[in-house]
Length: 224
Image 1: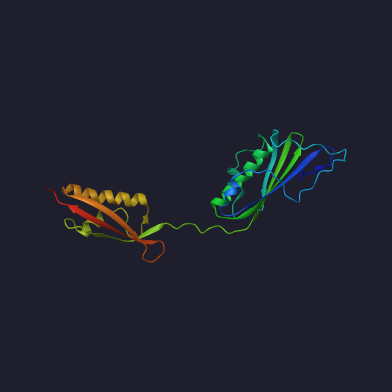
Image 2: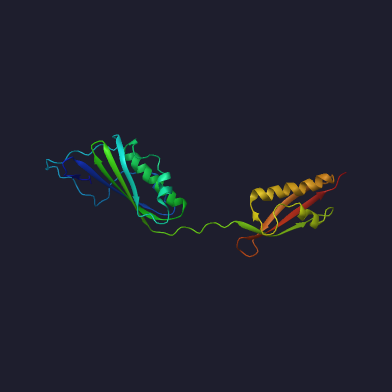
């Protein structure tokens, strides 16, 4: 249903839009300009109403507000919006901006209902976005920590010496890049002894938490 024009001295169109967002709604990435089912209908008989502007008509953004957000700060949401006050935009572009705000909520795993209200006065537009948050943010991912490092198959270099070559020590943060770096360090020790080697790391979670145990399975190839 089409929105109604406010009966002021200067005609000012008020357009409502409601969008529902969940943690990862695929459809939320598709812009829509369908107004809510409870939007007021226009009265054709009134002499004080005028036709609504096309959705692609250029409008100058005079004001943009976001309300109702509690778990995500406004400055972060505003940073995701690809336009600012003073820019010339269309109604469809405004709705796309709201979709960008919804994507921030998806990234934080926070659900919500999103409402858009446009106040159009001639070539100017005031945009009001309201968020009804419906889900808690996901717990931040904790980094993995090394509990122990061990070796198997090492015959020519002791486990104690191989451990000294590792950058990740017990209690340190474990990342794929650091594990790869440690593989190269162990390999370098074998190169110095002119011994070929294949290293396969195995990462285990013995306590089913953020603590990991790494076992480096070594296959040595003695020189001919």
